[in-house]
Image (tube, rainbow, N blue to C red):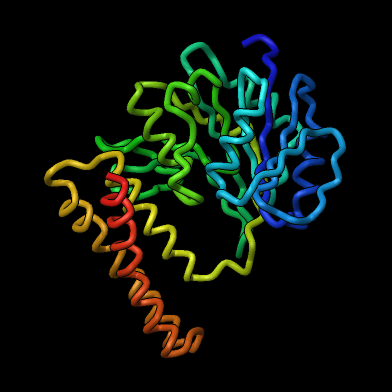
Length: 284
């Protein structure tokens, strides 16, 4: 592509304190042919509008906010980062350079800051929703997935797969999109020179696993369901289930959670899987 127009979309909810830094990092890009769109997904705070297009909507979730950004964009390429990220100055230039006639999506390198910095270069997922980070091998059921805080698509590719599925308010929405791109035989490329720094909220709690597992089950059943699939999904997930219960017991023995929390979170470990299955059945 020769100097394509790029639309950058940042979605926010309840106006995180980090939003302005994310906006500034994009506006400071050394690639000039772009627009920035900020989608406020139901927030009530005022966002100073300067140098970007601001769109407000009722709270519908991240996938819906991303679709709103796409529908209000003009670019041949549509790139996404998050409101708790800082993109490097050459991020957009590297995204554009990575596209060629055979590429429909780009995923960059994301450096995540939580307990300690961790580099996410290659995301691979399989049909059971098992995510592997920086894996060296692609197995039979594996596909490359974009990373939500650092991804870009051609408009044609997004139209071909019918955008983000708004049934995923958050968690697995970008992996579901990647699976559908993969099924259409379109190409996802990784460019580790397109770098985003992702500053995760340190108040994330174990209970968020409920939504993660729920949408993992829904994702797997939605995209790969067949007559024998559900027992295979449960069997494949069994080691993960045991590991989650083991972690809870460790937290309890180290007095990081109470007996009540141990019981409550153990219950949620099972209910999340039932909820994802129920969501699929209700949709179908």
